[in-house]
Length: 214
Image (cartoon, rainbow, N blue to C red):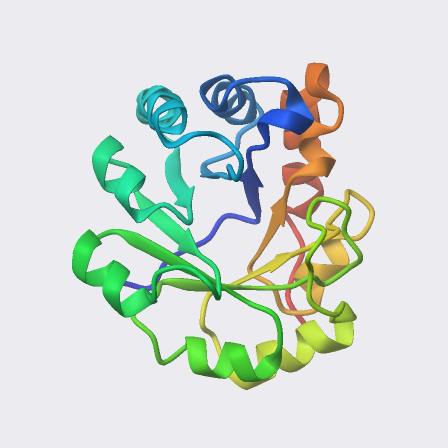
C-alpha cells in the first residue's frame, strides 16, 4: 500500500454541533483550507445520511478534498467516498479492505499502545490514537493518554501515519504534533463557532504549518 501523507489538520463534521448539513460543513471547512475531512454521523437514519454524504462528496470533489466516512463502509461505497474510518467495534479492517478495494483510504481508531501495535499489522493507511486530552464530543471514551502516552505510541509504531484525536484545541494541537502525531483530528475547535468555521480552520492550519515532530 502507498504511504498516506496526512495533512496537519484532519477535520471532522458534526451536524448537531455546527447546525449545518455535512455538505455545508465540507464547503466551510474547505474554504479554510481543509483537505482531509471525515463525515462523522451517529444518530442519523441511513437514508438521510446517504443523501447528505452524496451531497458532501460532490462538494469535496469540486474543492479537491479527500472525504472519509466514519463507520459506514456501505455508505462510503454507495456515494464514492475516498475511504472509511473504523472504530474498534466496527467491521474489521480486513473485511472492509475486501469491500473497498486496494485504493481506498482506511483509518482505524485505537485507544492504547497495545491496540496501536496490533493496528499496524492490519491493511490500514493510518491509525488514530486517543483521547489524547479530555473530550466532550464523545461520552464513552477510553482513558486519556496524555502527551506521554502519545509519544510512547509514536515510538512503538515507527513512522506509521498517526492521527491524534480527543480534546484537541487551538492551544494544545501544537503539543500533539510535537509529541509525534502527523495530524490532529479536530471537531469542537473548528465547529463550535459555526459562523467562523473557515477562519478557525485557517488559523489552526497556519499555527501548525511549521511545527516539527520531536
